[in-house]
Amino acid sequence: MVIITLQRNKCIGCNYCVELAPEQFQMSKKDGKSVLLHAQDKKGFFTLKSLDETVFESAIEAKNACPVKIIQVKQM
Image (cartoon, rainbow, N blue to C red; front, side):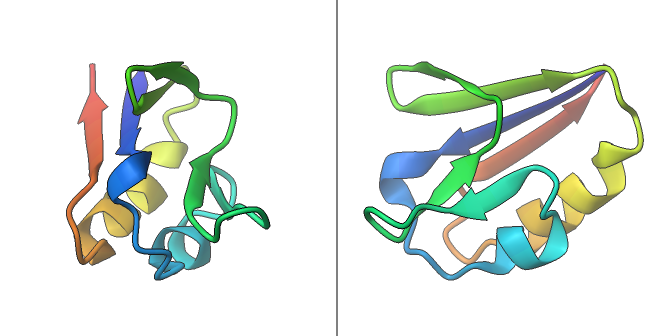
């Protein structure tokens, strides 16, 4: 299982996560911030739990590219 967490309120809208992991992220047309697709919101932390292990590599690339370090990725 791969767990991806996005602290969306600190997003600066750089778009790196969307470029590196478009199957997990997209940019909001409303506020220009990143959206973690199919995630659940808990007090500003958006979390996606995926059984698809193939998303791990691209999620790690997005995490490493994020200039404000608001993406966390864990593999269980």
